[in-house]
Length: 194
Image 1 (cartoon, rainbow, N blue to C red):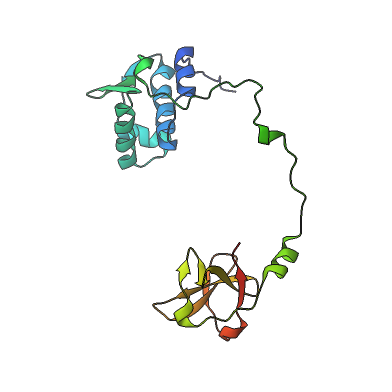
Image 2: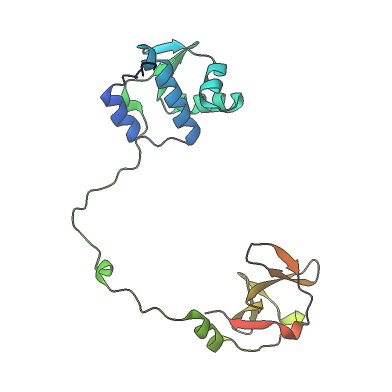
């Protein structure tokens, strides 16, 4: 059985990395750099982009961009091909700072939750049959307005949208797919938007 090896990383660096916001690519790059430097008891090393590609699985053009971002954030230093970590941690960007508020709870946090109600029953009581002509339809944030009241069109409990360019209604299915509405317009249910 082969002997497992370890990478010694300074505790201060770990503390700073934990507080630093990194993108997924930046994080993978940092881990690879840790392995290629501190894993071989070096603070800097000559590491090519192809080595980073092999270590991280990230494409070469993304490696170049990720390295540039880490250099801008001053997390790494590069001198020609010698790459290593910037150990002046004060230059690293600070992550999100969370204030310690102790046991303070907002007043609204102590209120009880509302009683559970059957929303289908409420919807049935809100629904009204309203007829619209094309000139009445004014789209307002996914609703259609007649007078002062906004309404939302439904067919078989699925929302409808009017596409003016095609002069047709479309049903929006639960999976997000749009299909052409083929029934009569007077079969559309208009629900008052509350």
